[in-house]
Length: 281
Ligand code: ATP
Ligand code: MG
Image (tube, helix red, strand yellow):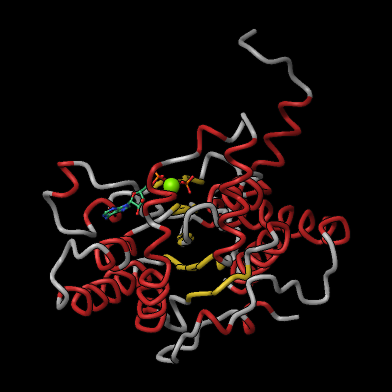
Protein backbone atom coordinates (compact mmCIF):
# COMPACT_ATOMS: atom_id res chain seq x y z
CA UNK A 1 0.00 0.00 0.00
CA UNK A 2 1.20 3.49 -0.82
CA UNK A 3 1.07 5.24 2.57
CA UNK A 4 2.18 8.53 1.07
CA UNK A 5 -0.93 8.62 -1.04
CA UNK A 6 -3.29 7.17 1.52
CA UNK A 7 -2.45 9.41 4.47
CA UNK A 8 -1.61 12.61 2.58
CA UNK A 9 -3.83 15.60 3.32
CA UNK A 10 -4.77 16.93 -0.11
CA UNK A 11 -4.07 20.68 -0.18
CA UNK A 12 -7.22 22.65 0.52
CA UNK A 13 -9.34 19.56 1.11
CA UNK A 14 -11.72 19.37 4.07
CA UNK A 15 -10.18 17.27 6.81
CA UNK A 16 -12.52 15.19 8.94
CA UNK A 17 -10.51 13.37 11.56
CA UNK A 18 -13.59 11.52 12.80
CA UNK A 19 -13.73 9.79 9.42
CA UNK A 20 -10.18 8.45 9.71
CA UNK A 21 -9.93 5.11 11.52
CA UNK A 22 -7.18 5.48 14.14
CA UNK A 23 -6.93 1.68 14.39
CA UNK A 24 -6.20 1.15 10.70
CA UNK A 25 -3.36 -1.31 10.01
CA UNK A 26 -3.82 -2.04 6.29
CA UNK A 27 -2.74 -5.51 5.27
CA UNK A 28 -0.65 -5.94 8.39
CA UNK A 29 -2.12 -7.94 11.22
CA UNK A 30 0.23 -7.72 14.14
CA UNK A 31 3.35 -6.12 15.51
CA UNK A 32 5.19 -9.43 15.11
CA UNK A 33 4.31 -9.70 11.49
CA UNK A 34 5.26 -6.08 10.73
CA UNK A 35 8.54 -6.14 12.66
CA UNK A 36 10.67 -7.12 9.70
CA UNK A 37 9.19 -4.41 7.47
CA UNK A 38 9.80 -1.74 10.14
CA UNK A 39 13.39 -2.89 10.70
CA UNK A 40 14.02 -2.81 6.95
CA UNK A 41 12.72 0.75 6.64
CA UNK A 42 14.71 1.97 9.66
CA UNK A 43 17.83 0.39 8.21
CA UNK A 44 17.21 2.06 4.89
CA UNK A 45 16.64 5.35 6.71
CA UNK A 46 20.10 5.11 8.27
CA UNK A 47 21.65 4.54 4.80
CA UNK A 48 19.76 7.47 3.34
CA UNK A 49 20.88 9.70 6.20
CA UNK A 50 24.47 8.80 5.33
CA UNK A 51 23.86 9.98 1.77
CA UNK A 52 22.11 13.16 2.94
CA UNK A 53 25.06 13.95 5.19
CA UNK A 54 27.61 13.20 2.47
CA UNK A 55 25.77 15.26 -0.13
CA UNK A 56 25.65 18.18 2.30
CA UNK A 57 23.29 20.20 0.13
CA UNK A 58 19.82 19.50 1.44
CA UNK A 59 18.17 18.69 4.77
CA UNK A 60 15.05 17.11 6.22
CA UNK A 61 12.63 18.53 8.78
CA UNK A 62 10.14 16.13 10.39
CA UNK A 63 7.30 17.69 12.38
CA UNK A 64 5.40 15.51 14.86
CA UNK A 65 2.12 16.81 16.24
CA UNK A 66 -0.41 14.85 18.27
CA UNK A 67 -2.64 14.79 21.35
CA UNK A 68 -1.02 13.79 24.66
CA UNK A 69 0.11 10.17 24.82
CA UNK A 70 -0.32 9.67 21.08
CA UNK A 71 3.27 8.55 20.74
CA UNK A 72 5.47 11.44 19.68
CA UNK A 73 8.27 10.28 21.99
CA UNK A 74 7.87 6.67 20.86
CA UNK A 75 8.08 7.69 17.21
CA UNK A 76 11.28 9.63 17.83
CA UNK A 77 12.78 6.63 19.62
CA UNK A 78 11.63 3.81 17.36
CA UNK A 79 11.76 5.39 13.92
CA UNK A 80 14.65 7.82 14.30
CA UNK A 81 16.62 6.01 16.99
CA UNK A 82 18.99 4.43 14.50
CA UNK A 83 20.12 7.71 12.98
CA UNK A 84 23.71 8.81 13.38
CA UNK A 85 23.58 11.53 16.08
CA UNK A 86 26.15 13.43 14.02
CA UNK A 87 23.65 14.83 11.56
CA UNK A 88 20.41 14.47 13.48
CA UNK A 89 18.71 16.53 16.16
CA UNK A 90 15.43 16.19 18.04
CA UNK A 91 13.84 19.23 19.56
CA UNK A 92 10.84 19.30 21.95
CA UNK A 93 8.71 22.45 21.95
CA UNK A 94 7.36 23.20 25.42
CA UNK A 95 5.46 26.17 26.81
CA UNK A 96 7.51 29.13 25.52
CA UNK A 97 10.09 30.55 27.89
CA UNK A 98 9.98 34.26 28.69
CA UNK A 99 12.64 34.89 26.07
CA UNK A 100 10.83 32.84 23.43
CA UNK A 101 7.50 34.49 24.21
CA UNK A 102 9.11 37.88 23.72
CA UNK A 103 9.78 37.07 20.05
CA UNK A 104 7.64 36.24 17.03
CA UNK A 105 6.28 32.70 17.18
CA UNK A 106 8.63 31.32 14.53
CA UNK A 107 11.80 32.59 16.16
CA UNK A 108 12.45 29.60 18.40
CA UNK A 109 11.74 27.18 15.56
CA UNK A 110 13.93 28.87 13.00
CA UNK A 111 16.95 28.61 15.28
CA UNK A 112 16.73 24.82 15.31
CA UNK A 113 15.81 24.02 11.71
CA UNK A 114 18.13 21.44 10.16
CA UNK A 115 21.50 22.50 8.80
CA UNK A 116 22.54 21.29 5.35
CA UNK A 117 23.12 17.55 5.39
CA UNK A 118 21.14 16.93 8.54
CA UNK A 119 17.77 15.83 9.86
CA UNK A 120 15.78 17.68 12.52
CA UNK A 121 12.82 16.15 14.30
CA UNK A 122 10.37 18.51 15.96
CA UNK A 123 8.46 16.96 18.85
CA UNK A 124 5.63 19.51 18.74
CA UNK A 125 6.51 22.60 16.76
CA UNK A 126 5.47 26.08 15.63
CA UNK A 127 2.10 24.46 14.92
CA UNK A 128 1.40 24.68 18.67
CA UNK A 129 0.95 28.37 17.97
CA UNK A 130 -2.17 27.70 15.91
CA UNK A 131 -3.40 24.85 18.16
CA UNK A 132 -3.00 25.28 21.91
CA UNK A 133 -3.02 29.07 21.55
CA UNK A 134 -6.29 28.85 19.63
CA UNK A 135 -7.99 26.36 21.94
CA UNK A 136 -7.15 28.46 25.01
CA UNK A 137 -7.70 31.85 23.39
CA UNK A 138 -4.11 32.88 24.02
CA UNK A 139 -4.16 34.97 20.83
CA UNK A 140 -6.99 36.91 19.18
CA UNK A 141 -9.10 34.79 16.81
CA UNK A 142 -8.05 36.67 13.69
CA UNK A 143 -4.38 35.93 14.43
CA UNK A 144 -4.81 32.28 13.43
CA UNK A 145 -5.39 32.66 9.67
CA UNK A 146 -2.55 35.19 9.59
CA UNK A 147 -0.32 32.63 11.26
CA UNK A 148 -1.25 30.04 8.65
CA UNK A 149 0.11 32.50 6.07
CA UNK A 150 3.27 33.12 8.10
CA UNK A 151 3.78 29.36 8.40
CA UNK A 152 3.35 28.88 4.64
CA UNK A 153 5.98 31.57 3.98
CA UNK A 154 8.31 30.15 6.61
CA UNK A 155 8.09 26.67 5.13
CA UNK A 156 8.60 27.99 1.63
CA UNK A 157 11.69 29.82 2.80
CA UNK A 158 13.08 26.59 4.25
CA UNK A 159 12.28 24.67 1.08
CA UNK A 160 14.09 27.22 -1.02
CA UNK A 161 17.12 26.71 1.19
CA UNK A 162 16.98 22.97 0.41
CA UNK A 163 14.92 21.65 3.32
CA UNK A 164 12.40 18.90 2.66
CA UNK A 165 9.55 19.12 5.18
CA UNK A 166 7.32 16.24 6.34
CA UNK A 167 4.54 16.77 8.87
CA UNK A 168 2.82 13.96 10.74
CA UNK A 169 -0.33 14.13 12.80
CA UNK A 170 -0.48 11.03 15.01
CA UNK A 171 -4.14 10.15 15.17
CA UNK A 172 -5.42 8.28 18.25
CA UNK A 173 -8.92 7.85 19.63
CA UNK A 174 -10.04 9.38 22.91
CA UNK A 175 -10.47 5.84 24.33
CA UNK A 176 -6.95 4.87 23.37
CA UNK A 177 -5.63 8.02 25.04
CA UNK A 178 -7.39 7.10 28.26
CA UNK A 179 -6.02 3.56 28.08
CA UNK A 180 -2.50 4.98 27.78
CA UNK A 181 -3.10 7.34 30.72
CA UNK A 182 -4.10 4.29 32.75
CA UNK A 183 -0.89 2.50 31.72
CA UNK A 184 1.06 5.52 32.88
CA UNK A 185 -0.69 5.38 36.24
CA UNK A 186 -0.05 1.68 36.74
CA UNK A 187 3.50 1.38 35.45
CA UNK A 188 6.07 2.87 37.86
CA UNK A 189 8.41 3.35 34.90
CA UNK A 190 5.90 5.58 33.20
CA UNK A 191 4.49 7.55 36.11
CA UNK A 192 7.02 10.31 35.53
CA UNK A 193 5.29 11.03 32.22
CA UNK A 194 2.00 12.00 33.83
CA UNK A 195 1.26 15.70 33.82
CA UNK A 196 -1.65 17.80 34.99
CA UNK A 197 -2.21 18.87 31.42
CA UNK A 198 -2.96 15.27 30.34
CA UNK A 199 -6.25 15.61 32.19
CA UNK A 200 -6.86 19.32 31.96
CA UNK A 201 -6.70 19.17 28.12
CA UNK A 202 -9.09 16.23 27.70
CA UNK A 203 -12.25 18.37 28.03
CA UNK A 204 -10.93 20.30 25.03
CA UNK A 205 -10.64 17.18 22.86
CA UNK A 206 -13.17 18.41 20.30
CA UNK A 207 -11.72 21.91 20.21
CA UNK A 208 -8.29 20.45 19.48
CA UNK A 209 -9.81 18.27 16.76
CA UNK A 210 -11.28 21.32 15.12
CA UNK A 211 -8.04 23.29 15.46
CA UNK A 212 -6.06 20.42 13.95
CA UNK A 213 -8.50 19.98 11.08
CA UNK A 214 -8.21 23.64 10.23
CA UNK A 215 -4.43 23.72 10.50
CA UNK A 216 -4.00 20.61 8.36
CA UNK A 217 -6.41 21.91 5.78
CA UNK A 218 -4.66 25.27 5.47
CA UNK A 219 -1.04 24.20 5.63
CA UNK A 220 -0.74 20.94 3.72
CA UNK A 221 0.97 21.42 0.35
CA UNK A 222 2.62 19.10 -2.16
CA UNK A 223 6.03 20.37 -1.08
CA UNK A 224 5.26 20.55 2.63
CA UNK A 225 2.74 17.76 3.17
CA UNK A 226 0.76 16.74 6.22
CA UNK A 227 0.03 13.07 6.79
CA UNK A 228 -2.65 11.80 9.18
CA UNK A 229 -1.16 8.62 10.64
CA UNK A 230 -3.45 6.07 12.32
CA UNK A 231 -1.69 5.69 15.66
CA UNK A 232 -3.80 3.53 17.97
CA UNK A 233 -1.38 0.72 17.12
CA UNK A 234 2.11 1.90 17.93
CA UNK A 235 3.76 -0.55 15.55
CA UNK A 236 1.64 0.60 12.63
CA UNK A 237 2.38 4.24 13.43
CA UNK A 238 6.11 3.44 13.34
CA UNK A 239 5.78 1.53 10.10
CA UNK A 240 3.82 4.26 8.35
CA UNK A 241 6.10 7.10 9.47
CA UNK A 242 9.28 5.15 8.65
CA UNK A 243 7.92 4.24 5.21
CA UNK A 244 6.92 7.80 4.32
CA UNK A 245 10.24 9.24 5.48
CA UNK A 246 12.34 6.67 3.60
CA UNK A 247 10.32 6.97 0.41
CA UNK A 248 10.64 10.74 0.51
CA UNK A 249 14.40 10.60 1.02
CA UNK A 250 14.63 8.00 -1.74
CA UNK A 251 12.86 10.31 -4.11
CA UNK A 252 15.28 13.12 -3.30
CA UNK A 253 17.87 11.09 -5.21
CA UNK A 254 20.67 11.98 -2.81
CA UNK A 255 24.10 11.93 -4.41
CA UNK A 256 27.57 11.43 -3.01
CA UNK A 257 29.67 14.46 -3.95
CA UNK A 258 32.55 13.98 -6.37
CA UNK A 259 35.85 13.36 -4.55
CA UNK A 260 37.80 16.53 -3.83
CA UNK A 261 41.09 14.81 -4.76
CA UNK A 262 42.36 13.02 -7.88
CA UNK A 263 41.73 9.36 -7.00
CA UNK A 264 44.44 8.01 -9.36
CA UNK A 265 46.98 10.32 -7.80
CA UNK A 266 45.88 9.18 -4.35
CA UNK A 267 46.15 5.55 -5.43
CA UNK A 268 49.76 6.16 -6.44
CA UNK A 269 50.46 7.81 -3.08
CA UNK A 270 48.85 4.86 -1.35
CA UNK A 271 51.12 2.37 -3.13
CA UNK A 272 54.18 4.46 -2.33
CA UNK A 273 53.12 4.58 1.34
CA UNK A 274 52.57 0.83 1.34
CA UNK A 275 56.24 0.21 0.61
CA UNK A 276 57.56 2.63 3.23
CA UNK A 277 57.32 2.74 7.01
CA UNK A 278 55.38 5.64 8.59
CA UNK A 279 57.28 8.47 10.26
CA UNK A 280 60.51 10.19 9.27
CA UNK A 281 63.57 8.03 8.63
P1 ATP B 1 4.21 14.04 26.59
O1 ATP B 1 3.47 13.68 25.35
O2 ATP B 1 5.22 13.02 27.00
O3 ATP B 1 3.31 14.48 27.70
P2 ATP B 1 4.63 16.77 25.88
O4 ATP B 1 5.11 17.15 24.53
O5 ATP B 1 3.17 16.86 26.13
O6 ATP B 1 5.11 15.29 26.20
P3 ATP B 1 4.86 18.43 28.12
O7 ATP B 1 5.99 19.08 28.80
O8 ATP B 1 3.92 17.57 28.90
O9 ATP B 1 5.43 17.63 26.90
O10 ATP B 1 3.95 19.52 27.41
C1 ATP B 1 4.42 20.58 26.67
C2 ATP B 1 3.29 21.58 26.67
O11 ATP B 1 3.73 22.77 26.07
C3 ATP B 1 2.09 21.10 25.89
O12 ATP B 1 0.94 21.16 26.69
C4 ATP B 1 2.00 22.09 24.74
O13 ATP B 1 0.69 22.36 24.31
C5 ATP B 1 2.65 23.30 25.37
N1 ATP B 1 3.13 24.23 24.35
C6 ATP B 1 3.99 23.99 23.34
N2 ATP B 1 4.14 25.09 22.57
C7 ATP B 1 3.34 26.04 23.08
C8 ATP B 1 3.03 27.38 22.72
N3 ATP B 1 3.60 27.96 21.67
N4 ATP B 1 2.17 28.07 23.48
C9 ATP B 1 1.59 27.50 24.56
N5 ATP B 1 1.84 26.23 24.96
C10 ATP B 1 2.69 25.51 24.24
MG1 MG C 1 2.24 16.18 28.02
